[in-house]
Image (cartoon, rainbow, N blue to C red):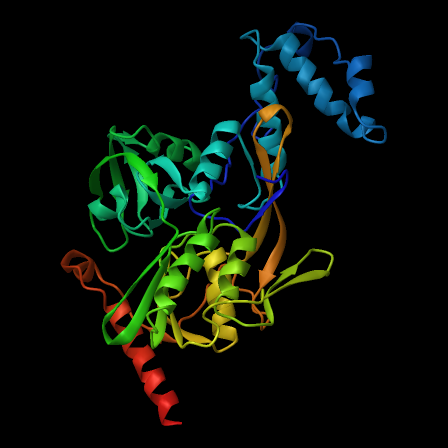
Length: 421
């Protein structure tokens, strides 16, 4: 993986908001309410903190005054904290967490080494757990989308499910990233998840056996009426070659049209989204990257797409997020095909992952917003489908898929209308 990895990421990628050392939490020190029967002179004398010459010399010139309180606080902890010795690595990681948290951006965060490795494993196509993309920025760990065929999907977990207990232990008030790490575990182990679901009066309980999750990021098959079906589940390391191989197989069967299923696709790499969109869009801008200083970068379609003329329909839902919204938004703006389903998740920002020295994890920082070719921002709004159709609990239980059915019907209507003209 490159030293700086650019991604448009959500779901399986954690957003860490842990409170740690120097994270801006409330510090209870020698603050005494008025009226207590003692004076400051009766408290133990504490010498003023100092900054060592070594600490001063290792701080970049020009920042020494700014960082003086940091080093003073560091030394106070080492000199006065009751439980010694303190863990310098933990304190360092806590300081970085606090720095990232102070930005007030839910997508900018520090990822400790374990979380960084887990995030990269998911995009590489395999890891061990329940098989779901999650949002760690809410009060509770929230399912963005279960991975098709995964343990989470088989037991019936749904987008929007909030994990309120694990193995009977209440998760209220526990940081969602810590909850995520508890959900992960070795293949073959059991975890019991209690979730709150909108519309349900009582919490639901799911007993799940964890598995090694191997995500086939792009696959396809021929449906009836000469329609090809392509499902893209993530935008990771293997997505582009898998999609191109799938398209070669399907296009060899001369399909009348294609349905592209981006439902429950939690996103992935920006560059992969451009490569995927380029298979269906012949030319033009796929997205704009808008920076804080007003500058922007455009990402244009790559020549040589295999399905740039065939009629297409794109399936989206509330679990369609980030990189998958880039593809759907470009297809919608260029009129290459209609979107069918329900409004997408709405993540319109771009993050850089920058690995830190000595395998100390990575910093994930938002560097830009992204816009569709028509310069639409979908952040917190999502993409509205051209044709709205819900997928109900009854549909899921019965195995029905009215969204796919209507996508095929809409595509056939488009093909018929085009032939008539």
